[in-house]
Length: 153
Image (tube, rainbow, N blue to C red; front, side, top):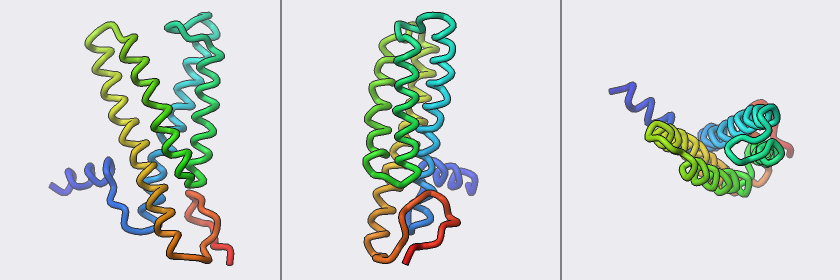
């Protein structure tokens, strides 16, 4: 039973303070970074194969750069970046689903969409909660995901 609760806490963490808000935001950051890595890998493959599923390497590289910027924004606990991550991820999922040709591909895409979707949603939850908690602390420092920073007074 304890293991089930720990999985639930992992996939839908309770946000009760600044630290738990940061931990939730890290999930959105991780999703964005994974999108960058996957995008760069596909861009490299597309560059060697000329075209990958109708997308050229430049389009994949641009998507990776955009998600890199989103990752930096989420690292800085930006609400806009967190929302942008989810909003820009959804068209990717739709595109993949429209281009999937087998049940296995569709299932794989749906599972990855659920996992990445949860990570991005938790990033949104974390960044919004962090800003709410910060509103109660007028002398807190600039927000970052790093726990070792000291507040600027």
